[in-house]
Structures are given as structure tokens and as C-alpha cells.
Length: 480
Image (cartoon, rainbow, N blue to C red; front, side, top):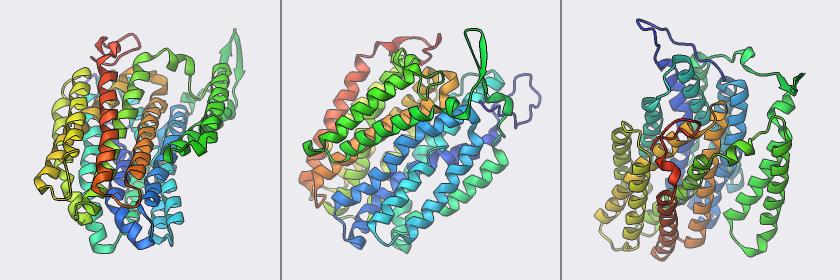
């Protein structure tokens, strides 16, 4: 792990977190959520401009998350080995390229390609931030980064506030292409901050030798990265996500490919000297596995609301993209407040239970909405969703930090996002299937039932998870 010794240690024997690292950490980590939220209000204008129905524009959502689901754990592993600086610079530079491609895209196919580039380009931000938090904790001797982790969560919530509103404003001023062009200045700023603030990798921190049975041997770059394992993981995940994007029995072969690749991946990882994902450690870490499961179902609810509800407010309720963005502000403002207040507490179980309850109540209210509902009811739904939005993200993020193997913090954080994006893929597929050609009220209600089912499952996964009652320490360090 890169040792972030960039900050001066003034007037204390126990230095604090180097705050010069915060700007690139925060900006890098929000590149993905800003593109997630901006596209929510751009789907309808893009569909109208390019003559594409909602079932096709849904690929703009799926493409980004397909790329990011695959890229996050891979880039996270590279960060664990080589440190965050180089991966951060390469990835954020790709975001700028994607912004140019998207702004000039002549058709939906090229636009989907731009979203794929954005997915890969935004892969490094969050794992790099988590790796820096870990390295700073080791440097300072303070393994309680609650304030920094809360700052990451609040930054993502703030961007989620700005995203739909900014997207609506950009569309009103310059059309939907400006939502892609925005990535160019953001990428330039991220690269400059990374060059100026992120610590350079320590060559001695990258292991090149491994001792087995008293014999020391030099490992090649491919062995350290486990390229075959990465390839099999990619085959498994892409097949699974393509199946989830458009659930149909005629695509059973994709599920079979995912199962075959998964079996080969498992065999490879159990035999590899330096596995891409250490399945022995992961399989024995029940709390971390439970956290990944909760992340999956939580994001089914969250992204069904973000994309499905937003499309309905435009097509089914008649709001403009700008006003559709405004309608989501209550959710994100409350989420920021909830994150700030709850971030002071190390409790995880309480956050998760309250977040589960908020999801269920919000879904029940959505089932009462119609095209003639008063505007205040839409705002009420958004407000209720602010509670789980503020609690779940923070609780899941903190859980992974304390539950993961310290030497695999970045890749574990990447896997959290992978499970979350699998949930978003399910949400995207459910949204497309529920709405079809138009985002009408009947489709919204069908989607709400899917969301409600996921919300109940999230509650059950929390209620019956006994590991949440364990105290921090001894490898399973998630606070209860």
C-alpha cells in the first residue's frame, strides 16, 4: 500500500489525516455518482432526440454499470498492489475522453460506448479513496476514520443533490449533450489534483518476492495480478449482467456461461499463489459477505427509484427534466443531514434497520401515486427515501472498511460497488420491463412492487444477521 506521507506533522506526536489528500479523494469518488444522477433526467430528452424508447435508453444506465461492476474490483486490486496514484490518473483521464465522445455522439450506439468509457474511467476514484484512508490510518496510528468516511458519504450525497438539478439546468441551457461535456472539466480538475496531491508509489511497497515452504521466489507481474483470474471473473460477471439486463428464458445460455466461468474462476482462485480475489479469506468472512448481499438488494431499491421514478415524473406526471431534478432535492438534502448526524455514531445495525424501514414505507406510498396526484405527494416520497439514502450508503461503506482484509481494502471496496451495481442492473432491467415503451403510472406501480420485495429482503438480511452484534476487532471489525 502506498504510504501517504504528504502532510506535515506539526505540534503533535500523533499526526492526523493529511487533509491535502481530501480534494482528489472526494472529486475522484463522485465522478461515478454525478454521471449516475445526471443521466436520470437526460434519458427522456435523449430518447426523444435519437428516436429511442425507454427500453433502449435504459442501456445508457446499464452500460455504465456493466463497465464499472467489472472495473472496480480489478482496478481496486491494481491499487492494492501499486498504490492509487497511477490508476487514479489513468482512469480520470479516460473520463475526459468519454465526455468528448458523448458530447459528439451521432447516435445511441456511440452514446452507449461513451457510457462504457465513463464506467471504466470512474472505476479508480472510490477504491483509491478507501486505500488512502487505510494507508493514512496506518501512518497515523488512528484506525477510526469516521470523519473521513462520513465526508466521502456526504460528498456522494451532495453530488446526488446537485446531479439531477444540474442535469436539468444543463439540458435547459445547452441540451442533453452538455451532460456529457461536463466530464471534460471535471476530469481535468481530477487529473491536476491527482498529480499535485496524491503520493507517489513506494517501489519497496510492491512485493516482487514470495516465500513458500522456506523457498523464496520472484513473482512476475502477471502472477501478482492473477490475469487468468481477472479474465474468468470478467467472463462470469459480463455473462451474468447481460442476462440480468434483459431477463428472458431465451437467454439461458448467458446464465450457463456465467455458471461455467464462475466454476472455473473458483478453481483458479483456490489454486493461485496470489489470487485476484482470495476466496478462502472471503468465504470465511461472513460479515463481509452479508454486507455485499445487503448492498445488492439496497441498490435494487435505490436505483429503481432514481431512474424509474424520475422517468415517471417526466412522462407520467408531466414535469420537465429541470423540475424532475428539483423534485428529488428533498431526498438528497435529508440524506446529507442524516449522513452527517448518523456519521458521529459507529452503530451499524441501527442505521441498517432504520434504512430498511424507510425503503418499505416509501415503496408503499409510491403504490398510491397517480398522474393526478398532488405534487406534495411526490415530494413526500422523495423525502422518505432520504432516510435510507443517508443511512444505507454510510453503514455499508463503514462495514466494508472494518470487515475487509487491510491488505485488500481497495479491491474489497471495489467489490462492494460491484454488488451494488449488480443491484442497479436488476433495477435497470426491472425498470425497462415495467415501463416498456412509456413510463406510465401502471409501470410505476409494477416497479414499486419489485422495489418493495427487495426492501423486505433487505430488512430480513439485517434482522437475521447475527454478525452485526459482534464488537469490533479480531478481523471482523464492523462496529455494531
